[in-house]
Amino acid sequence: MKKIDELKQQKNLIVFLAIILFISITAFSTIVLANKNTVKVDASVVNIRTGPGLSYDIMTQVVGGEKINILTEENEWYKIRLSNDQIGWVASWLIGNTEFSAASNKLGKISVETANIRSEGNLEATILGKATKGTELTVLFQQNNWTQIQYNGQVAWVSSDLIEITAEKKSIIPTSITAKKNEDASIETVTVRSEGTNIRNGPSINDTILYKASKGDNFTYLSTKGEWYKVKNSDGKTGYVANWVVDLSGNKTAAPSANITSLAEATIVIDAGHGGEDPGAPASNYNEKQATLKTAIALSSRLKQAGVNVILTRNSDEFVSLNQRTVTSNQVSADAFISIHYDSTEIPNEVSGTTTYYYHENDKNLAETINKQLQVNNPLPNNGTRFGDYYVLRENSQPAVLLELGYLNHTVDQATIYTDSYSAFAVESIYQALNNYFSS
Ligand SMILES: [Zn+2]
Image (cartoon, rainbow, N blue to C red; front, side, top):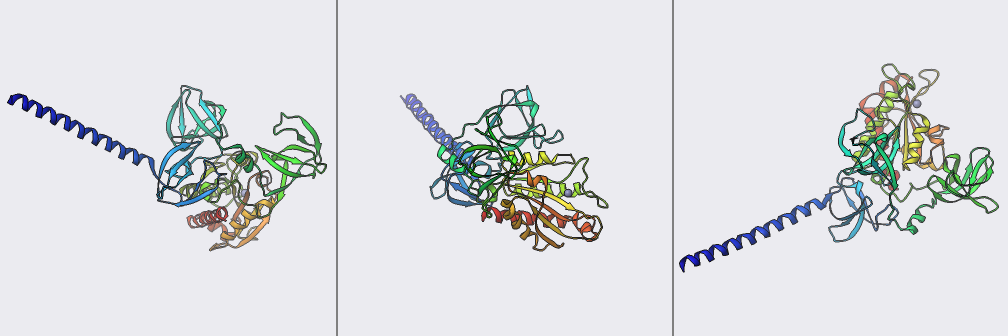
């Protein structure tokens, strides 16, 4: 009997221990799961919206360092629970060290056995990992035979030879909201830039030509579809015209595109002037192309720190055509395109200081905001904001400015421009200005 009692006791103990073990494992995994789904906000301020897209209304904001609870993910947006139990949506690239563009709607498939995924679009860049044949990746955009993708929650690159664009990603934004976003309230008039411009019955070059417009013809803007504008002529006839063959005019104090109210939500294209076989203006120990690249890379790092999706038109000493630079800006629907240059004059020491250029009337606001900031503590004179007929501004459908940050053939400017302190001044001024521009 005694033996049986002992056995019974032992059995009870085992059951008890098993229950304790089960409870502790369950409790432990709940804690692990909770930690995994709680993320810290990296950007200084992020908008919490009522739905998964930039076109949804902002319900509240959270500040950097705050922790939020992720419930689900949909199309690069997180459904989240705030500390006060409110439910909202936040762009996934604004939190937890991830940074990728919202603009993408394409999917790609790796078409070779294994493909290297790199940190930048060149063969010297760090390999972040490998993707095997058939792996599906979100494609952000393509340039110079490199494809920018979303890889493990960050922006990465793969050679375009190794990936095939397979499909347009399905948009989960309701059509009513998409339609609302496609009307740009800042555009009033669309003006044809050259003689014989085709007006088509649909938004692509495959659509039938309705008639040809003359240089300078004005149309009433109706809506935007991809790279095309739906327009109406004076007779009330509607048609489509490509955005790269027209100039826009309208509301001078145009707000930034989409529904962006903070810099962290923006896609910024930084354009380091010249490069490769095009040295730009010469200085004693360096050329303009080196100075522009130094500033562009420093500005890029500063913006990335703030959670901004940054795209450089070049990140090494390579030649990039003016057309490619604007194509990049238009393709990614840049919220701002900033071209960095350094000036020179025919006669040395004639002019000194910085100048901010814009081409389209709509870009004046961005130019003035940046120039205002460049006047604060600038060691060089400020020559103000001017109209400038530069290719990268004229052919740009996105808000664009060109900054001449000093004269390379002026003794004072030249000694200042290549210093780290001047680079820091320029970067901080542009960063602050963009912050003001997107939050105003
Ligand atoms: Zn230049």
